[in-house]
Length: 275
Ligand code: HPA
Image (tube, rainbow, N blue to C red; front, top):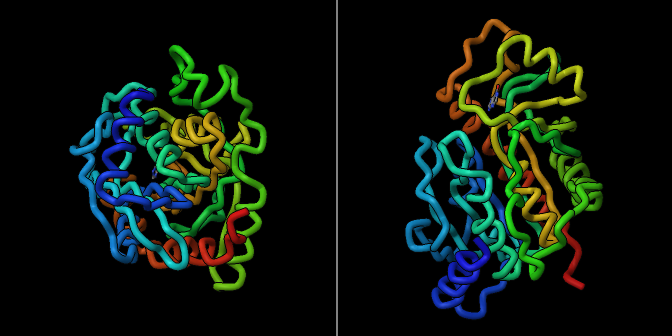
């Protein structure tokens, strides 16, 4: 996994010599529009990068964009690995470690999620403040690569407090309503049963989705700061009359893409100078 990341980072370095992105972003379901804002983008299809799988889900394109977003150099993963596609949890390792090796200090995930709070509205954004891993797998299972991080990495403060504060400030300055809470990751691909939704609420989760957690675990293991924002594309199963579908996820993902784009740009603008 680490070897693939090293090779992939070498390929990136060949294509964009001297380019050192500060933030690595993953664009979730229906949120690819953010990629259109990347200026002077160098595009590398996942197929050219060792260990980067070809995503199979509509709304996930499978390419790495390197360029300028707002006032920062960034690397955007347009597409991600979902465990429900049949990948082992370790399959997210090369993507996130490649971001680390090309210089990213921060890993920023966006995703689509179902709201567990009945007062949420589809299309609202939620700042992730912590997570619950119910994917029954961990991407760091297997031999540890000590060059990236420790065998037993802590998950305290996994979602960087300073980044959270910047996101809250950016949202308030931009007039974007930003909910916040705990994201619970399931394996998927089935949506939740009504009993699961009730159980997840009791566990203390505010949103449920099928991604992000393994990525953040890998990012924290190798010392990157992490930040993540969900688009709440629906109320979780049983909390409304809506029948859940991936089309609905894409629809509300796209509807919220403008707010997500403004929020991410606002965050990048407010990042203090490197130091
Ligand atoms: N559950 C799980 N994942 C999701 C949902 C949901 O309700 N909506 C978007 N992604």
